[in-house]
Amino acid sequence: MPFLLLVDDTDLVPTRSSTSLSSRLVGIGGVALIVAGLSQVAGRAQLAGSGADAAALQQLLDCPEAQALLGDDIGATWWGLSFGTHRKPHVDERRPGVTRVVSWRLPVAGTTRSGVFKFKGVLRRYVWEVDGTLEVGGTEIRTRSCEVVSGS
Image 1 (tube, rainbow, N blue to C red):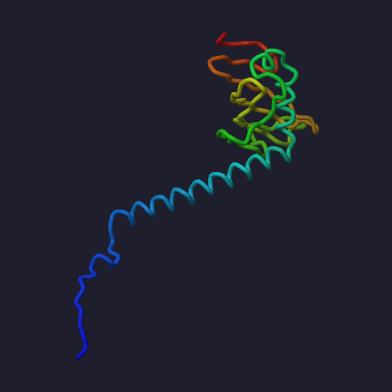
Image 2 (image 1 turned 135 degrees about the vertical axis):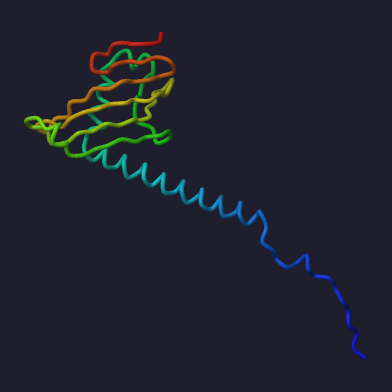
């Protein structure tokens, strides 16, 4: 005679719970993080392709006050929030010879500290004219004139 064993297996059946919602939220957050990362890379590539970042970083390298704060080997970093616009000038911004306009927030670092370099610039006759502010801790430096405007 066959032996029949009855087992309560309701614990093994998957049910909808709050963990499925949290899993979905984590998945959505992961996708948002990937999209934000790709946006950062695309924006930085556009900025680098224009040469505006090189002109801006050259101002940092030429400023002794910036070097005193950041240290040697100053450059853009890939960590930190980088964003901005790089575009053709609007009608009200058009001036003779201006072909591109940039406004950017760029994380920078040297051998001793890191900070944020916010700059604006115009491409006039194939040369970037850039003006920006370096923020390191509580200190701000205008890079074009290389003057400390706040902080120590």
